[in-house]
Length: 122
Image 1 (cartoon, helix red, strand yellow):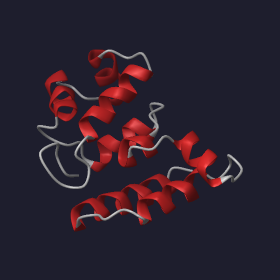
Image 2: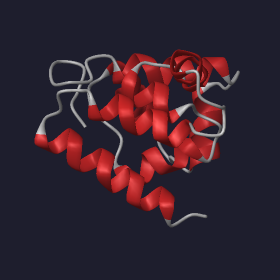
Image 3: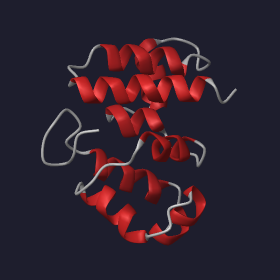
């Protein structure tokens, strides 16, 4: 995905940090939870120096992260309130939010690959 210095997700790192803090996790605790061996890796993601891989993003999903917020900046519950739809449709709302965004080819491919990977985890 794009880094802090450009692209369509200029605050991806800050949203990762927001989610980590919302979950009450230290950087070290999150690294352990998602299998990141070097805490510097997480610091680089949060600062926007580098971006997580698709496998890393899947790990965040399994750790309680609101991945809709990380990818779009809009919380999943806010998407539900805005739509007036039942809470059981977060995937639809996330898809609609992403579809309305202007994405670089790399960002679009990352999101599509993430959706495919998550659909296999059922």
